[in-house]
Length: 147
Image (cartoon, rainbow, N blue to C red; front, side, top):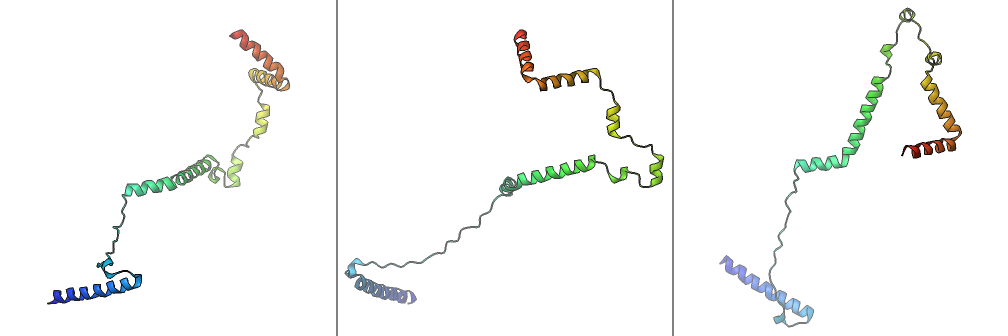
């Protein structure tokens, strides 16, 4: 009985809609077709990515910055480790009095006598700096004679 009532109601509604549409568009009722339509909500499944893809994308985006930051920290650590620290200096004046005086580095450099090879190298560098054309000609002749 219920199915019969639903079928009768459907036919009545289809006839009313067919008549209304044919009057609205000015076409005969035989040219209008009415069907039922039920919209189904289509929800896409949630996208899930493997953790390796997420990790690779993160390293692609932030890896350079992270590497540069680690390099900067390592360089800062090496600079601080290589420099003199406060613990190297004597804390008391008594400890400082027991130590021999430190020589001035400039005086040590001036007091050291340069060796003959170093002097010859410096003279050659000065000669080349003063007259580069002559130096180039001498080197050119030397290369041609050796070949």
